[in-house]
Length: 233
Image (tube, rainbow, N blue to C red):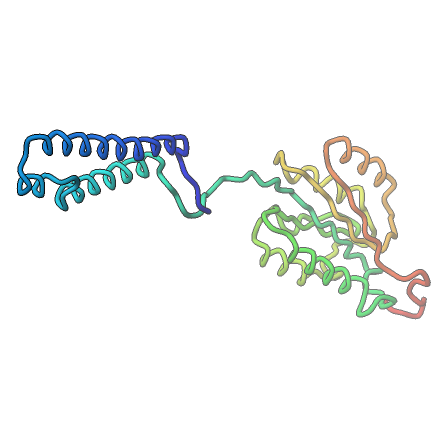
């Protein structure tokens, strides 16, 4: 990017032709005065614009030009500016109940969910991410962090065996997310579950979260037909 810091000083360039005109006029006038009483040999020595005089005047004009350019201060380069970027606190709330082992979605509901979250993390930049696992209870698996590699590691390691008790307490998971961050950033909860909710206060907790500035997104995983009864979950 090229710019002039003080472009208003360009108006000083007008003095250059004025100085040249004044200098030329004065030399012509001096020449005529000397021709009136000088000999031919004297006139040759006094003709307008000797080499040394022209050089001195040219150097003077050049110096004035440089001074004007210094005042204008041309600049070239990149300008650094601090830009405020809105960041978000995002809690991934992942269902690890036994039903998430169902294979109606290949390779399984849980593995499909983890792959989705892994890809979603790759699209984030600057946001803080947290992970809550839930089944019959909700567990803070990873507090808010900007270490995306760690977030991916925690998500990939999640299994249904980590659930202390079976069930699907979505309301408790939402409540835990709200209690786990006090930041004033934009806040969001992304719930991934097969929807088998055993928690009666999930809707009430979702409304409470919304009233406190949380955006809640739910992603259902599983097929319309569901898992055959013969499958071990």
